[in-house]
Amino acid sequence: MEKVEQSAFARLNAVNVSGHLEMKGQFSYLSWPFAVAELRKVEPSASWEVRRFHDGELPYLQTDLGFFVEVAVTVGGVTLSQIHPILDTKNRPIVCPTAFDVNTSIQRCLVKAIALHGLGLSVFAGEDLSLVEEQPVSPPPRPAAAKRATQLKQVGTCLSVEQQNRVKKLVEQTKADMARLLDYYNVESLADIRANQFDRVVRSLEHRRAA
Image (cartoon, rainbow, N blue to C red; front, side):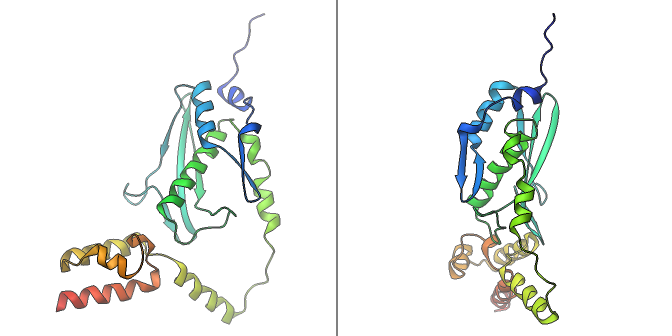
């Protein structure tokens, strides 16, 4: 009797990943080096791509809801992509992610994109339900409380890409020292400056230009 060849999904889904799970807090994660190694062993021609945003300059997307990354994995000519928010070890959104946070989320997103093709898919079973159950339902905030929450949200967010570009342009026009500016605000990059400090940064640079 002729043997029917398994699909790529079936071959990847049959790989036992239980011995390669890692615990971070209360969540289980599949080791990304193992996921990549097994993917390439089963499907040597498989490939993946980290999607770029903001005119192809950045490997993350900044939105009003938070920061996101996207990875697309191609197996047997089929491309499936996964979008993943940048989260901490407790699966909470990071307000101002660092380069390390972005890189970590890309690795986690890669594992999930691989799982769409079958490898380790069972690891994520019930993940959406557990998140829902852990979040208590809060009553609608009163007007004053809602206003305060909006203010806090604005304080916590970082400079948008447009704001960063404007600051860069002012720095170039005024021949200011970027390193000194970052050191003054105790940050490593413009992306780490708080949104509520934007006007102050601009006023300072424009004052320098007018002097």
